Image 1 (cartoon, rainbow, N blue to C red):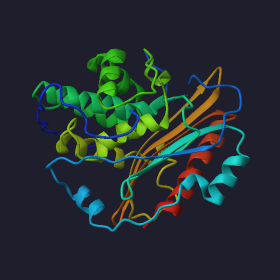
Image 2 (cartoon, rainbow, N blue to C red):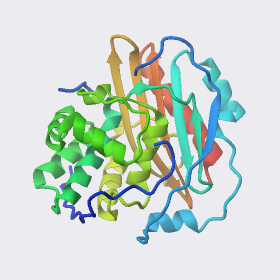
Image 3 (tube, rainbow, N blue to C red):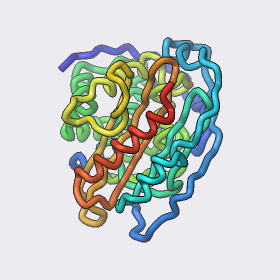
Image 4 (tube, rainbow, N blue to C red):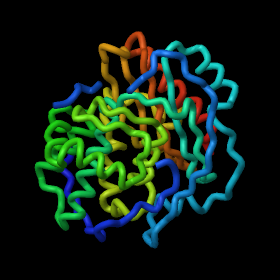
Length: 304
């Protein structure tokens, strides 16, 4: 396990994120409806506003010409696959190059499980910036365990340290969450993929909330997730593709297995953010196969 040291830069109090769009604990694991929801697709246009800070990531995503992109959820292979699944799937993709957001089953709430750990870390980094301090050695160790190994004990400690439900809710409101239902159990937070795209934008794209150093720190951890905790996003793409991901899975008594994947895929000037969630799975494997297959089909549609 690598010990990371990060220097965070303070930002002015009351800064507002310049991004458009809708804005105890569970083990690694929504207000899920038990009725069948519509599988209609909602398409909206989202534009991320960059700051004066430039990074290698931003350079590689802005030097490519804009090209038409199909809604990945309307591609025949994806639609046909989703139609056959017996679970409840909701997903969203933000294509950075075209600036378009695609949503499947909009408005469906599902539980975060361990996917929320990248939200906990983003809140910790923001709080450290506001306090004009670096992360402590202990926080470095806990953050690494929480993201790379999905360690629940580390997540519990950092959840307490940041201030729990209220602190996370404040941060999520700041970055533009509009559809997430807070919970004192971090794994039981109910959210939508569209809200999760707002979080991914704060982690991956230049913005007024997290500094470049904070974003690079979190992205580094997401890219180093252990193989035994990695499925979903990035599967089906070449090994040289850069993938940052945080998955989540948990067996709930009322809705069965919840399985999620969330993160970003970057290759040869193409960058997209995606969150795929599914519940009412008969077992964990069924859910993992669902999100992994969808992720592979999305890659085939959005690859350079």
